[in-house]
Length: 455
Image 1 (cartoon, one colour):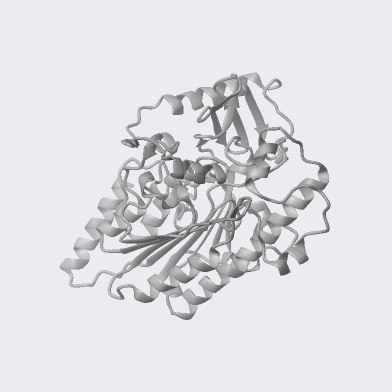
Image 2 (tube, rainbow, N blue to C red; image 1 turned 45 degrees about the vertical axis):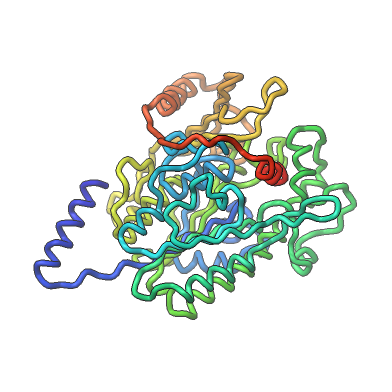
């Protein structure tokens, strides 16, 4: 990356000497759809019409089909999404740390971009966590409505889009912009539009209501889900995705109708997925199975080919490096990600045999106590090793033969377990200086809000 940057600087200097004007940098929009599983989207093979607008967007650009997230929950994953660093590199693994590393916003602002953010979660919107550093304007839309007997997380996507449009209409037209949008609509609590609930959800007589606080009891195994419960949850999730897809369409239509589309790189992704009892769990945050750790990346805009699918395994930490490259913005030194545009700009393409990692789990339980950051994951190609640092248990999966991870091969392939674990140990023991600032603590009000979100 450093060598490419020096080449780019030399080229710009040559252009300046020859009197050629530097081409204007593109605008950049990064959209994070919290808790969106790619396997519930049409473009990734889902058989129900949950995502027509997302699918249409994907057809206009490039789809990465096999993306691993950095963490199975919102805060550390978004810190990685914005920095291009693993959680152990940026240091924000829990609510007791503040991000201090360079982000997309700080770097874009440094070269003249107008930096704007509209977000929909405490994990990102609370400035104590530092994820909004570098944004000249930021708006946090609360997703919580407190009723008579419970706090309900209702969809706020329409408000996010309205504020995003307002920012774009008021922006400085002489400057390129970087806009970061975060939507919480697909996340529990489930409050889909009535018409989409009617289309996607069959009659159900069970006790589930789709609220986070109720599902926490299943996550802790106080209760078990029946097959009917699982079907209902998945169908409610489908209805939520379809509800959000219509909201997103209004934003994308505005970008295109305003003439911004031709000069704007748009990247759509998620921070993590969701469990629907595939491994006897609900919600997210605890495990590194594919239902939780696999996320989508869709990209379109100048320099990005249309109709391309990239099946090489890649990582969420690659996204910042890629956006820096596409926008011709110098990236910070030492990023953990690589430039995904090599998939179409380089004859060699992307490295197929590359180690990918995930860490910073949350809300696990060990000997009756809540513990965090105790599990790890390493993957290369289709091989994946999950490791529990407390129990010492290692699980090995072949994702090509067993994509649902039902057949643990650790006992049958001990030598391969040892090889992958040695690489994982090297990752865990590498010297890093995160610089994350220690916070004094989470006040009672914020802690209550986080508990309602399932933390």
